[in-house]
Image (cartoon, rainbow, N blue to C red; front, side):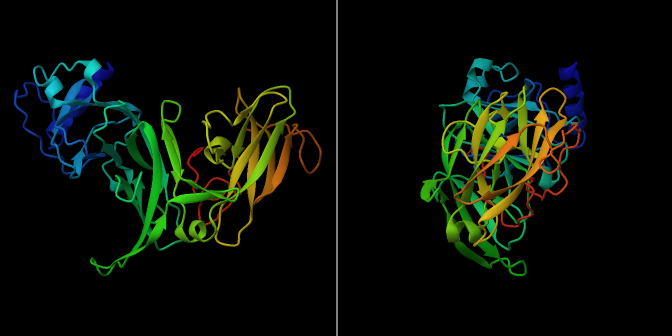
Length: 376
């Protein structure tokens, strides 16, 4: 049924001048024209001729060019769909029946059904053959600055995976599994002069507990959906990112899940090594020390976090607390089901604790957002 629905959805777009299913494709490679509007931007850095499939149907033959290539793929329910890329040489004999064992790249992505630029996903296709699967980066660059930023992988001359203007959030980018360093180029452009471009500088390291480290990005099966908050240049470059230690101890007889604002705390904290997946869950009488970023400009050394402990089964709130995290210092929160002010037992609510949180979901409205990579 799913395949039938997809088939008719794509057929509808054929008559609208969008992507088409090729029932009897030629044996030689003839690239298809890009769509005029679409929800997926492909940048083919592989130097290979590629064929794109959705749910085993051929959608586009993509030229071996790194030029922007726009594709519109119907996804009315906006659920996660699988995009498969094959090398043309691996499917040329029978393009309508590709061998799944020869798939070149595979991306599971919740594509928007909208062709608006703000909703569009970007897929950077590398020529690396070590990994087939592709991870999803969700990039945000909060407002409060006039600077634009370009995000590069591995070096200043590496792949540029995104350009962001202040205020852009949740921009989806597909990147191969692998280990990368992040490099941020900040620049200014005069909106009244198309040729006015001023390079302002780079951020390529972050300061953690007084030491400088590369900004690592690790993508694998356990880290296939990563939130990346791009720092503002001034705060991060002047003093480096500041962090404080937050120890959370669960003194209740059941496991709890910890939130910072409206985000799982694992998506906010810093982790120098290892994987942050499910760090937000504390076993009964368990404890963990989270390294929390101090967001804000130069001179900011503390930050208030709205913390919540929630039931695993029904999501109700066991306890809520406002905790001040101080740079280079330690603070502890005991989760015991008692209100921290009155000492009375919290009856538990279904609220998400969004009240008092800023855009970054951490209880702080800080315009200067620091870099958190969901555990990077």
